[in-house]
Length: 102
Image: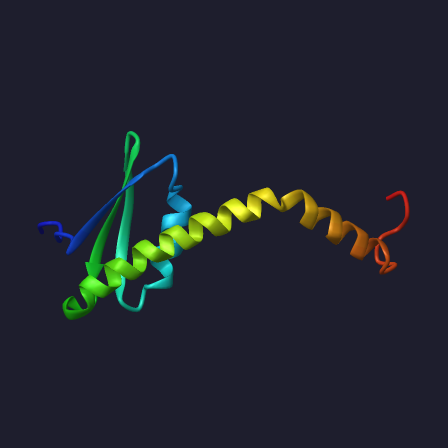
């Protein structure tokens, strides 16, 4: 059985677009498309398979926008991790749930 051909292919710089971020973005549109993410050296390839071919063009543009959004979210998550951990530590230290010095 021949492998189905993608309806569109998005190629991205793998250093700037981690595979898990692209997968998260693709999942957001799983009602409109399915995606297969792979890597070939420095290039990340996202093969797009449309559930509804008439919505393919819009879906691909929306997916590309969501990829950028997810990359920025991941960057913000990484940059604010220390502050979030500190806030959580202070918040939980005042609940009485954790023993002092534990």
